[in-house]
Length: 299
Image 1 (cartoon, rainbow, N blue to C red):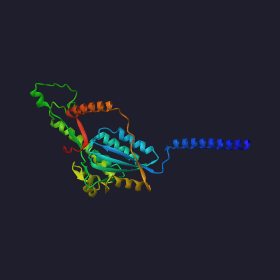
Image 2: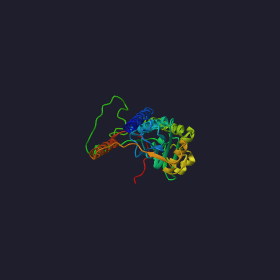
Image 3: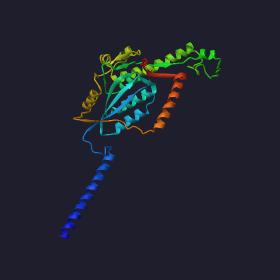
């Protein structure tokens, strides 16, 4: 009897060890192939929010790269609610979207506003979904200068500048733009504007001439954009989810996955916000800025 119990115990131990070894092998194989280690019976759609003024690209670009590598994520939705922003950050995000959609379907879902740089980014996606009242378009370039020479004269401040070239202090707040300054800046703006037109034409499969006709900075509603070929269909975020599912060949329920948020302390959040506010105010007041941004009215 004891011998029989001993045999059963040995068999149980062997089966347990075999199951453990098999589990380790499967886990290692999944890790090597980049597959998720946890069990999930639903396909996943990665959702990347693009909110507010676009001032940098690193966060969105890293999120795109992460979802591109994750084999459990079958498609990506860009939830765009932005009036645009910096030229270079918008272009960097656009480029990464174009690279990512070679492997995964990408749908842009427009919120209240997806204008200028916000539209620039959305145009790189495979499909664009907008609400009928979404404000979009504003294909154009903006450069602003602040002039303080009269104020400085009134309060008795005089600045003398020594420079190595005629245009070295272009945009300085203490002098007016000369005709030569304005001509040089116009040339720069037209070049960057042409980059915008090319990007939209390529992303939306439209002719350059057609895009140029509407690339004067005007904004459109979602309904108008549909007629112009700037978006593919009208709908809300759930319609974008359904479209992404269909494009990726997914059936049944899906799980929406959002990027992980970095943990920050309350003190760091307040301190960083204060520093950015002061720095931003100084930069806006005195700096030379060129942007794909819609100057929306105050609300």
